[in-house]
Image (cartoon, rainbow, N blue to C red):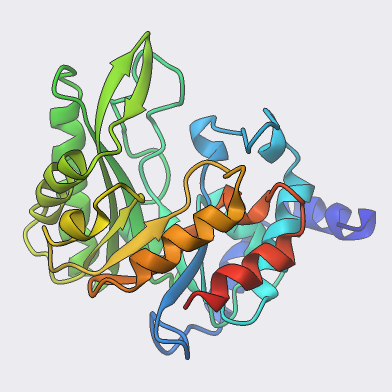
Length: 291
């Protein structure tokens, strides 16, 4: 990002904060949740708000906001990319940069379960709510649902997510739910990435809220993906997870999953924004080609 663009971005936030709302109001909204390829191809950038800044071997990769915005703008400019997922600070920067026209914009909602903390499973809603997403003219909201059988904080998180699903549906907006069965191992929360765990997590997530009419699931790749995805009729999007050392293997697993009937696209963040060779455009184009 050029110094003058960054300076203008900061100056706008200082002197004209209303410009964010004005940019949201004039944004061209997409005609559909899917692109011409028939799928939803989203770039995810809601990690920093949860204190998760690592990408591959780079512990603070996402800590440089100007660099992150550069990568996001480039990724969103590539043909076939039709969506973005982020928290208010990131999406509002992108609005001011004019990068969200014709994109499916999904606001991240519960970022309170900060990575590496004692209260990580207590995923409180600290970012968007349904009313602010609707007020911004965005297309949906995303929530993380980690189910730890031994952590009582799971119950209020489930209740909060169920309420958010209903509120988003009431606004005729997508509710993107990202479920995991999680356990604390050596003091850290780890997601159980098996077919059995994903089946249990997805069936719980699918039943959240007073309607599932606008619920989409955001799920990881696991072994026996066909068996896992047979557990629901809700549309699902494949998440990228950690940056893969072997990107060809990651692409192959995404391609295989995309052949399943409920899988309707990809929501990839760090794997495409910070690929091992740092070729963002090349990584994004390779992912789009899978669709």
